[in-house]
Picture 1 (cartoon, helix red, strand yellow):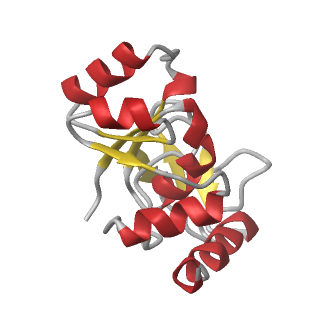
Picture 2 (cartoon, helix red, strand yellow):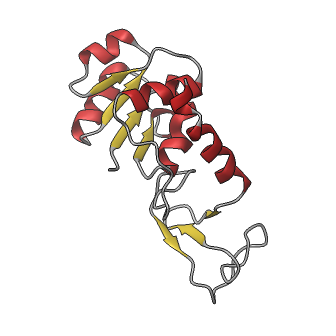
Amino acid sequence: MSRRFLLDVMCGGLVAYLRMCNHDTVYAGDVGLEADDALLERARADERTLLTRDVQLASRGEDALLLESHDVEDQLAELGAAGVDLTLADEPDRCGRCNGRLERVPPDESTPEYAPAPAETSVWCCQDCSQYFWKGSHWDRVAETLEHVDDR
């Protein structure tokens, strides 16, 4: 089940992983949120779980998860232990760049030069930033990382 997260700037390494698992993930650094009060207000207003490494900030949040590790893979293990589903989506619906909605590109449509042809492989396009995505080598690396999360 997908969840809604707000990540403070200390948890930015998790953004792509969470979005690739179809979690609606806002990164504070992308939206200019720095002050603790602003983070807490945004998390509350948007009904998001705040992910932070700041003990005091986490203690003030209505719905906050405190991550203790600096290492991204260890942070992923902490999230998994907290019950966050870290399964890569069969059909991705979140843009890794901006968190916008993805839509599958029909097989007969063209794509930019950097993207594969949708007739040959599944391709998605972000409705907000127009970035194209497909399950390539980056997807494979993320899948491998997530497979090893349980081993930690």
